[in-house]
Length: 197
Length: 397
Image (cartoon, rainbow over all chains, first blue to last red; front, top):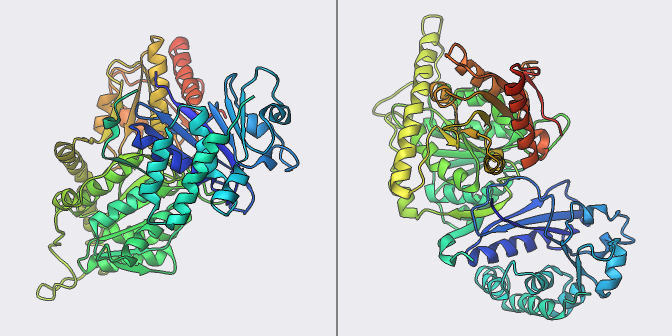
């Protein structure tokens, strides 16, 4: 039976959520993995909740359905959790006992557990202030690359070196050296700063 | 951890980007297109190749899909190698021109990124669009993955332009599920593509002024039917050419293609038949059920037009129950289009298994491994009870 790591990204349109899934897929492919990266498309509105998905495996991937029971949930926009007018169930939907949650927030992981409505023992929660990191490193609010760094640190789905090499190789034409350096800096800082409970 | 060499030379591309890249490698003489979701990115990427001087194509940006197909027809009649792409309402708007392209025997090649038809409006995947064009005289090849969508385009071109065929072809892939998903794909070198597709030299064209011809003339009762008979024989004959080209593709590049893919079908009692991406999900379900000792299998038609009726019927010999999954409803009150064709192919055959039809996945509704389990469960119910209670209907959500 094939084994997949399934990842679900939550954010809002224009926050680079779809790009984050793409970058992760490309980096994992560099490592010799089979990958899928796909968005959950709906009507396009700036600020609307957006989801994107990854499936990563050491075998060819044949599944072509949505990700139902994610191994990792990455919450790029913390306003989706509280005060954002969106109920939390989409974030916890289909979670397993050991699902890893990585949240972009200045708050600690223990506090986030409560905010997400997770009981003790349910899932594993990590936090990183990816918004602040992106403003410092890139000069814009694009928390996706810092979240990728955090993901590489707390899971073994991808190596930091693959994320960085892929970004250098494939995005140096598209972005200025400053933007490339900023994003790589954000990945590294995200990896350093992410903390669990 | 598997060695990293396993996916060496592979890249990650969406279905749309892979098709646009294939079009760049083919470098057709003319592309006339009007972008529509979810095939928009093909036209966007190809426009970039055009703007960057990477292709010698004449790119005609038209004001509608009707015009896109009309321009393709004009260019193909003039002797050009012509490609385009569309989805959903776009294909529907091309409808009358589809018949002109096939009736004039012009080998236009079009990628159809499958999407539901309005109303109600939906931008998501189903096969209502290409199934609506199933009687338009176009060859239809369906693709499970990004890799297949890419490989099929080169093969469709070879088949369409073959002097024995001279019939337009559409290559279909699932909207969003394939068109917008990044997957591993192995790309061919430009030189490999050039060698495989060869140069297009039509025997007859309007620009060949030394050998003037008439195209699309008025035909009366004495000849219209004979034109149609010739066309009918040509598309039926395309089946052999599709098989031949698929085999050659495999010999050259290591990925063989037939008229259909049979997955764990040899000793299967219960079989699902389905097109495009849902076949992959069904394979995963089959492996899990096989691990528990059930004899289940899949038949994935790759070629739908012309319909490989003999090959499908032969492949199903020995099976005990079949479910055809249709991602389109023909609104006939008698199941979906693939269901009708498969049942008709089996009719009159000795030991014909019971065949049921289920409509699934309309407007992008997800089709999961659990859905496939449910379908196989229904088939085993039929085997246990010895009768079919519901021959066709909609798959439960």
